Length: 541
Image 1 (cartoon, one colour):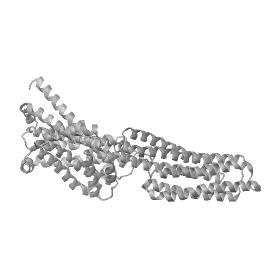
Image 2: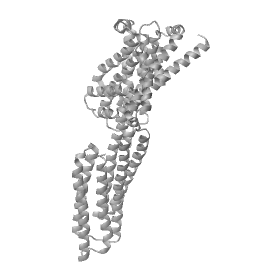
Image 3: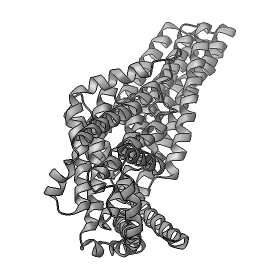
Image 4: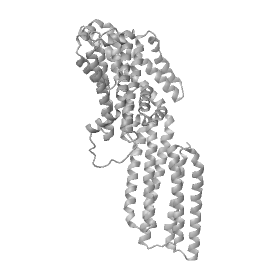
């Protein structure tokens, strides 16, 4: 092969690989956006049952055509405490099974019908240009991605067919199992996709090329791809918490141990490929894809009963070194790749923010009721904590909005609105501390009946918050009539309290200088009820 021929071969091979990767990206990104609701349901089925978690991991990966995305999401869930390591271990095993679907699709390139599948690129692009609905346009891009996958595979196979003799001589020389295994690891780590490496190997088989003597050698590359596929999850866990790093390590341990077992089996049984997959399947591409599936399914069956061992090993290898407890948060950058899941986590973070703001309000009101300046500092600390949570949510919402689709913009808009309403509660808490200072500094006094009436209004607000919290967390519109009734009661109480205060002023039971504090406080309490009701009604939208 001359330098010119080698250059042309590399250009064609890289072009084919590029088209293939673009196709995989289009397929994965658009399926993921269309399937975010289904992903949310799938990940919501996490339980302590290992088989269920394996099924969830496999189904999610098959759905979005990327074990890397699934594993990154699993690491994210572990990082925010939504999923424990035992659940994550089983899901990671399932994700390895689900990722073999891509290789099975690539194996179809060995059949003549795939030539016609390439026309899907044209159909998909036309759907994207002509269709008005977002769902149909995404569907069109999925078809275009699928077509590009087969075009990329065809380009790679054609490049190899043209230079078949020269390439065959090169690959016949590579017979060392360890070297082949390392090639699989490095290529997959480089492109961060085991599917891409496996598909290149499949394209070689379609072109009639064999690795080494044509025995088990090609399988060592496939084993290597499983180790290289761990790079994405491990890189994703670098900046995460201890348990998230352990999840990435479990992925590596599982794939490494599985590859080691099969490596030994293939070394000890040189005729494995000839006695099994070559006998069962006529097409070389199908043989490779089937081995890939067989490997991952077998490893899952073998190691699933030992999930706890993987968890314990990860805990021994990655020790808990944090001396200061990290503030719990439901937000994780990994979730941004799936808008539905990110919005679900934002809802939980909103509840955490609301709990903090309400605790600040309770402490602030208690400082007023007890005339205790010592409670002002704890109130301010809670308000500062609420501000930090709100800032984190605001930045997260901005990043999510930049990559979300139209259907999710309403939910994101509602979260922005709710964020503002919750922070008004924190402001009311701050106002309570101001009333405390003014009451103490000016030696203001209120009658016992005033304190009782205020306590009644506080009790109504606590009831309203409990209902609002439940409505937002469970998206329960059935609670809105109850919320309306309680909020009407708060409004009625405000009017009654102010009317009663005016009567006491006329009777001389209250001093005029206390009016500004009392009326402002009651008005603030009524506003708090309004903000809670606004938050609750975003569930309806």
